Length: 270
Image 1 (cartoon, rainbow, N blue to C red):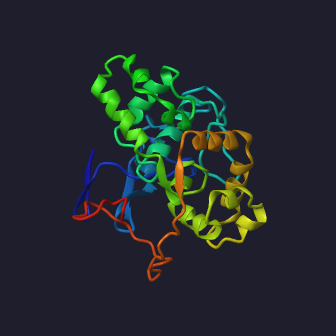
Image 2 (cartoon, one colour):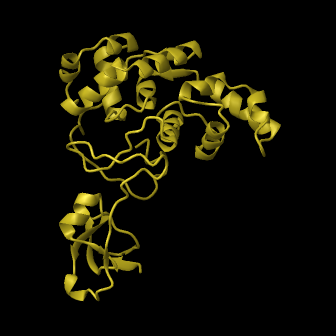
Image 3 (cartoon, helix red, strand yellow):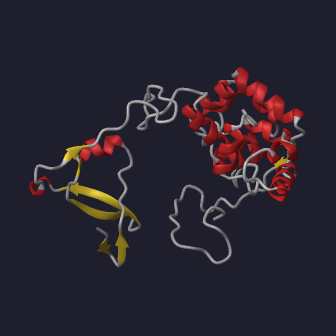
């Protein structure tokens, strides 16, 4: 049941990962003490085992991917389970969603449900296929109106120009978010330089650690990644190589937590 805590109503609390559940020795049905990490995020602080009734049960993570049923793996040094199957429907769908997201190609009107329908009907295999879609491909889909099809194709085609920062983000390289994309753009300036970078070159970049460096290096040396990048080029994707604007560094190294809504910008933009 929701509880009142420091002036707000808490209905859910963070558990982070399986390691945290194990550390707390938490069971389903337990009574717990909840706090607010950083005075903001609801967090389970302690379990009260003395209040157990005997009906509580241990929680266990699934051993296999719920989408493709591959055996899940926990990479060394990570706290999460991952599906190793690159052809997994759920993984591929997630890569599409990442590609078209606001920080990526920002394709309006192309959400998870439409992506699933396009994948189910064999119209797209990887995100580069989006730019080869025609209106007629969508007309055959059930409950897809002509106007909706036309608008979606227009929306996709309108996004063929993209900044280098957003392009790198859209690729979904493990451990590469917006800030790392900025660092890569500032250091390498264009895609060709980045593709030729050695692992040592990547490790020279400030704020990019060995794990991220290895992810980036492996991505650009992967044959499928090279084919994907070539398909984007064939689709007419134009990367704009304007140098990122010099950003005010006064707040560098500080962390801020934004909650609620902002009047002039979104939380994502902030």
